[in-house]
Length: 266
Image (cartoon, rainbow, N blue to C red; front, side, top):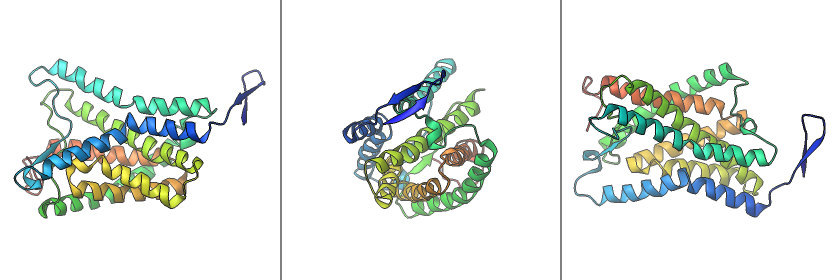
């Protein structure tokens, strides 16, 4: 049982959740977020490999228009999608609050913005260059679909929405798949190695819609991110790195597609 001093100095008691509650809460969070995305990606992958033609001749489109030809309605749908995708993070914060904790226990706060950003930029520089090379190789070998990071109309809100989408992806994935999941698995008695495998395979699973290359590349990234989280005890640098990686992918594609020969387009 934990106690925490209240605003008047009195003690607020927080009951330790049972193992069953911890397990059920974890499954609920995953079922409402990236666990469900993993199942969806698997179904999509089965559809792709059973479709006539090679994987590289098919496309996986991210950040597509939700209302073609109606920019204001499209913007409303884009912002709605970004906001609702973060609801599982709010659910995680709620579960932690019931234990007398907050997202700060995962290292997701504003206490170290510049060190987090610096570490994140270094991670993004290394993983970004390796990731592009791996994607091009996997697609060339026929293991990956052609990934189209954005297909939004050329309107004023295009780039702000792409940046918001990148940050949303980063917050959702790193808070849940690294910080929250590892904390829960540790408290459920899982070994560090088994938890690393679970987190990394989960990360790879919801990228399976991109093909085998997307699965393996993101699983490898998951291993690195879990190792760094164990070392630093903070998801802040991972959120920064993931945000920079996705901003580079989304905005970079928007600026370069059709203008450079090495970048595949649908």
